[in-house]
Length: 318
Ligand code: ADP
Ligand code: MG
Image (tube, rainbow, N blue to C red):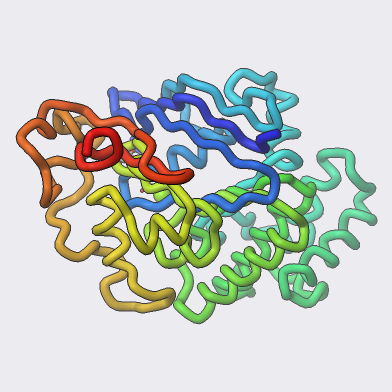
């Protein structure tokens, strides 16, 4: 059975900003999915929606089936349990999500106690084990967040995410705020944990090379939609969609500090969700757009084994 199945997910922020516009995803047990796209393409909105963490006023439709249960309609009490024990989120900037006045071991122990999984004493011992699992000495648990480096704080965030033994980890740019050496260490850590614990993983990044190296499958997001998906190495080495091609050529190597953020040869920025271009949302930036692309919207269609892309030049439209 699928660990996660997302069907026709749409998210509109207050004011009519359509940040996610019909996303379908499927993840089986132990599978690792990478989601790539420039800043503003809706990746974080997608991640937050999977655990119903959007700000008030956001309109959501579609389905988010986590182990067969719809996160979008489940009762509040159930949702709280699912947020730790079903799936948990690791995001960038751990400093802002750790409580500055509590020791980190106590913060790791808290959800374990809250969900009735252990007594406070046993939860603290478990916090020590979790710290060691993420490569920190258990004694570091006595530290406050400001006493740790950025990489150590991100390790603490990962320990917290593992605390209630979820089946799925959603990591939203988990290494973006870290320097290159530490980035690689944290990525290896996540990869190792996911393999050891047989977790499913959704890893979000603007860096396609990082994802291609870590994940089995890739989904490329543009203007709130998935414009290409398929096996990670195929999408990375021979992308079909012109946007995926631009991203793939922009990120040649893991940890390469040059040209990390601006895709080569791709003018402009992703569109504002309040002012989407008509037709294919990518056409104003596309080097191979046809006249029809300005009026005809494109949806995902089959493009090789296990692959799909939303471009007039791809698949049946070719
Ligand atoms: P990404 O993670 O790919 O950078 P986001 O999901 O953060 O993209 O943002 C997608 C779009 O939604 C952006 O245009 C962003 O400005 C907009 N957006 C994000 N959060 C909000 C919000 N709380 N209210 C209104 N618009 C938002
Ligand atoms: Mg984001």
